[in-house]
Amino acid sequence: MSDLALHNYLPRVPDAALQEYIEWCVLEQAKAAECNFTPDISKLDNLPPEDYVPKLVEQFMKVKPDPIKAGLVAAIAGKEADKHALSGLAIAADFVSLYVKYLIPKEGSTKEQAEEILTKVSQDQCDKLTEIAKKHGVAL
Image 1: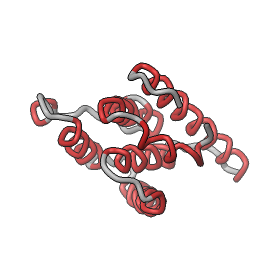
Image 2 (image 1 turned 90 degrees about the vertical axis):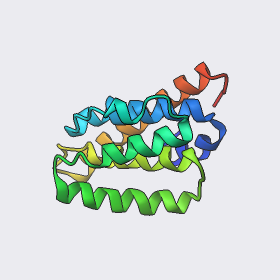
Image 3 (image 1 turned 135 degrees about the vertical axis):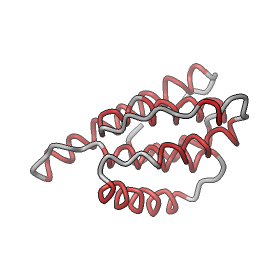
Image 4 (image 1 turned 90 degrees about the horizontal axis):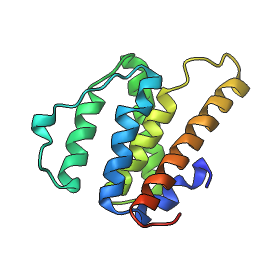
């Protein structure tokens, strides 16, 4: 699965798995972008995935280590996610994946270095989605 195809697999993954994947993106993978996010659990407790995910993403989007870069990245990720025309939690997972992916490159003074970093981040996302989906009985 390549990063270009990740959005093709998201609709096949159950909501519980998408929730787990999004949590991984915002709690673990985002650390590489210096987004040390700690959610307010009191606002998330006992919510079903369709309510939990939007509230988690809303909290995460308030964490901006570099507000200008975060704003630009959010616009780019949103535009790209819109093109994928997903619905439900799959669109949230797509947006978060793209947002975190584009926030991460801190190094990379050349286009090739930046592309290498983006490729690694994409591969990590694909691997994690595949692992989570498998745990939920879905083969990608």
